Image (cartoon, rainbow, N blue to C red):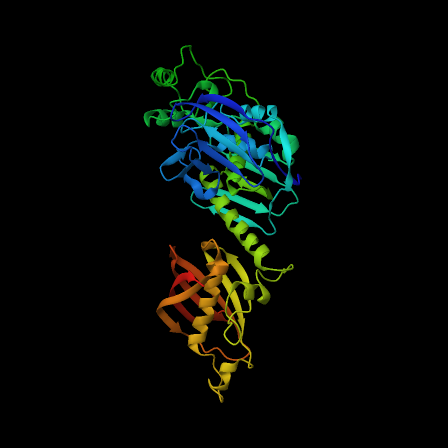
Length: 464
């Protein structure tokens, strides 16, 4: 795979109408320096506000992917981002003079063609990847969606769709070499919808910029003359349109035998670009869409945050834990005899964390609690939960090394089982609430799968 970051050599523009808003938009790709990332810029608004193409800026996925910060929006960005990701571009400024990217022919190919004409160039800094080292799963039982990401030495995709329609049915595709296959075999796959969906979109005053050339419309019901006339008026079609023998509205040339599922890969790659860096992993997706893609990227973003924290605090590889004791000493200010966590074995930043405290007879508190029957003081079990919770707050502040976590309250504290020398405490802390430096966490401590203690902990993050 590529090792250096990439941008384009010069600027270039493309124009068209937005799919849903119908507004005319001129989109310009502009070279950007190392570390800039992919950013959308609304040049039509005062101050030309920027919106980084990152998962935290996704504000809507109803009919495509919409990014926003405050009141500023950019709609239907997935095909633009797919073209950039498919060409493995890391740093590009995307300027628009309207709120929605042009739909063009409903695929990523017009953007790919333009970017290739602008010449892709390597930059003098290494490319960063999220390397998948364990299986990550997204499952939606209600919608029958499954996405699995497994370790791989490069980016790969296997995608399946399964519709109860003879014109579509079950389709599979695989992308194994992004550099060789994306532009040639996937970028030209156009978006698609069912005839019944098209009518609903028109009734909802959407697809104002849609044209019969910008999507595959698959017939899933008998189309009456009245319905055809309604669509012709909405899409400004002057000539007669018919249903092809392949069940497609209009006499359309199918670009690939399985064009719909290939377009799903195009959409997936556009949504994956919201991670901010490419991945090394094999994605296997079934019956997914933008909503599932975005949820997957959120999971991947948690993994990315964890790996970044490991690189920052964990010196040397450790396949047995997330943070060893030396990393914990870099994270927490506590020291002997009050450091109550030995290692962190699981971490989903901002959500939950699992730590381990090995309880030894050498603990100084056993001298007085109690000499004849040593028991770890309950308040110290709670303290251990609090310290594990402090690790959970690492990604909530910009400069965690400069912060302290103070308890402000404890609720629903319960002690279920004594903790004695030789026990190993497994402490799981889950985030209940976090906003502006104030948080609430649920901590539970286990010995041999038995609950020893639990508490709801309120805390505040302050400067050291």
